[in-house]
Length: 280
Image (cartoon, rainbow, N blue to C red; front, side, top):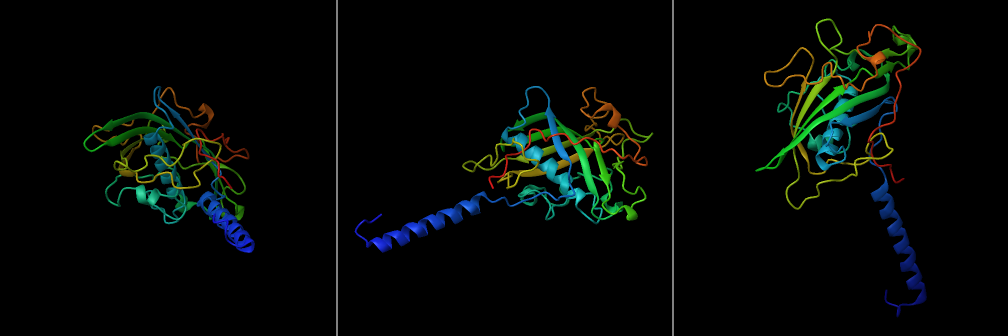
């Protein structure tokens, strides 16, 4: 700073500098996203031995799957595609495959279209990363994972509009009927990392928060996404997640009858590995 300036000018510049710095700090640290209050469940991940859930590619795979499910749950039209909307994670729309380039459908993992307005979702969404591999020229990552919704319940905030009244009931979970074996679903993602010279990660990918408050996708792209249900295997793409011996869902919660309600909700476990806490 030029110390030859008058004292009042120096003081005014100093105050202005503090104000600008304070505003800049507020702008960069303020979260840009908040999960809907009615989505009260947590995502809990595990991985096969040797897979790091907080590697760059793992973080993108986790963020995509979580936001895809949230996008599906918050689509009032019942659209089975995990189409980006205002409730999606920041960056999800930019990272998602273009419409028509993916055959990932989430129908059967609850039917939000048939639920009363403002239905709450509680419990735990279990997911397991089975495989993470990469190709070169161009560099591409492939993630294979299992997902389970058996540990989730729903409850209406308007009991008069729900035949189950003020009680919890399991998700409508296709895969638990007599024509299917198991309830796990296999998800396969193809991901393209940023070009050379661009940051490869925007987040530590772990922490106490239930969801990321800012964009963790950056310049990553998910170029393809597929989901395989029990009983609907595609040639060469079998469902790897039906009847797995390492199924993380508690036995009592598996394949429950969605027509039976309860006063006690499925337990909501802490998120794992979670996301960094907001700085605000």
